[in-house]
Length: 483
Ligand code: FAD
Ligand code: SF4
Figure 1 (cartoon, rainbow, N blue to C red):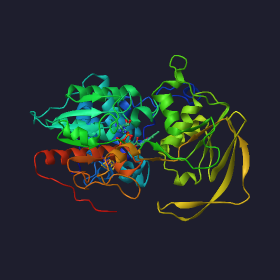
Figure 2: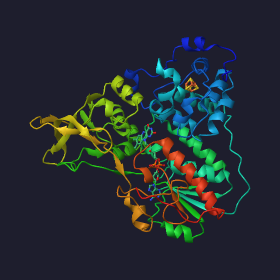
Figure 3: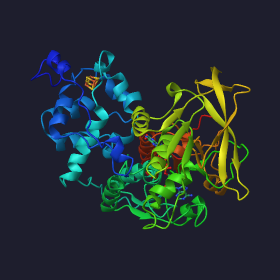
Figure 4: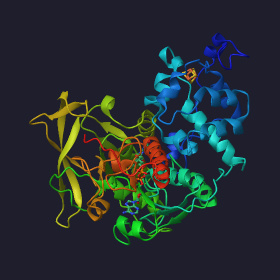
């Protein structure tokens, strides 16, 4: 008998429609930064979980980068045991309320859910967020058990999902963990990049509180490479270091006019809004000027966040300018859908070629050019090719450039014996996460370039296991395959 097929027959399960998520009306939400979806009610969650066929081989599990036992937690929801369902998810994923909101489920577990072959897959992501929220709202979040102290000290550089996951795993193993964060608030992209209407900051604060209860020390305003180098951490009493400093260096297109006032990197724009409260100016003292017409360059999650955040600051028009088509856009489907609902205009197969300004150095217009798709490039996606003579000048007051990120050189320059690839990312042992520098491990965007929260977490977890083995003397150096 299939797991959970006790009560209902599959034919009855298949008749249940995918439960629609209630949320703020687009006309209302473009005037606030509150979270867009309201989340499932308990009744909706039970119905949605009951759609699962409890497949014996459960393909969805292999689609999840951290292999959550999806049918098992869905069965617990169906039975109404939401706390047990949350505990089941947390066996594999330490940050379910975050992943349930921001993971690209449509490319992972939900892509291969059996029901999705003929209809709509089970809404695994929203159910993951539901159980984690239920646990949080009922005040029943548990602090994981900590093993007896090993007397070993580990430094973590960066407090994004990679660093926080490594910190949590290492603390559970009994190691003393100190996290060094360059900014004045911990959380990495989860707090300074992803806006409040997608991922409320109080969810991250809750995760940080749990880490602190586990004994993890978080020191903010500490730029490693400036206050101390990684070598100094190792000589000042730390037995190992995990580097999860992300990829926060914004790319620009290197076209004329990018230094005009009004042209922002997405990084600066979103940090001003999310971390420095620009949308609550003058209550917070960091304004951000958007003018009447905003153009956001790019097709990823960062571009959608830039567009939807600027929309909430009151311009007349916000446009996404993307050089490929919607099919190639790397943003999550839900983000694109939400942006369309909110009135963001999409201009596909178009790229800027230069920006124009007034005599005081303020942006006034941009030249854009039409593209067509040519042969696939190294990423496997068809290369955009400019169409000569298709240029036009359009007025614009603010441009947000969201075309990707590279690794900040500070740590790399201050740790020259840590090998990097030709792409400028840190090279690690695929099994342990150790870098070419013994005792120094790395994970997250610093080893992949801009990636996803769940992959950064998976790499934080892998490195924590590697660090534990290193501290026990089971491994001494990395086996690095040169790409
Ligand atoms: P980060 O989250 O970048 O954290 C690194 C931390 O290290 C930062 O806090 C930084 O300040 C700190 N740091 C850097 N240098 C130093 C130093 N020298 N000393 C001390 N601290 C340092 N992924 C998804 O899965 N879904 C999404 O919807 C999604 N949306 C995104 C939206 C935006 C706007 C952006 C920018 C990214 C998005 N991503 C999304 C990608 C995802 O957020 C990243 O892949 C992930 O955060 C990487 O985690 P990390 O821990 O490696 O790095
Ligand atoms: Fe349930 Fe879909 Fe996973 Fe099958 S593939 S176990 S139906 S979630």
